[in-house]
Length: 76
Image (tube, rainbow, N blue to C red):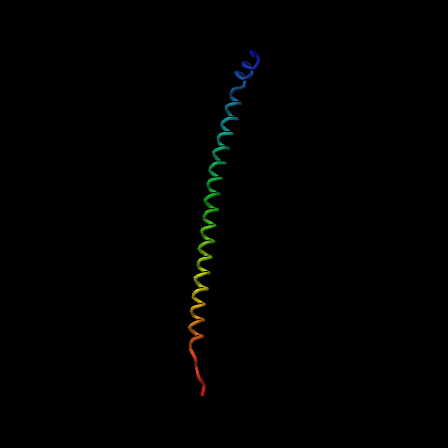
């Protein structure tokens, strides 16, 4: 047990450096995972908006097609 405490006392600076690097890596991972969730959410919202625009444009085209079909022109 004495040997372990002597080893830790002589090399504590290395342990501190490793712990600091691991903490920074953990913080970076957490920030990156939150950003990727937000970007995925934005992509889904943009896709939904595009789909709504396509649906709205199709409804407009159907209305125009129906109004054109209702006009009966007779040629004499």
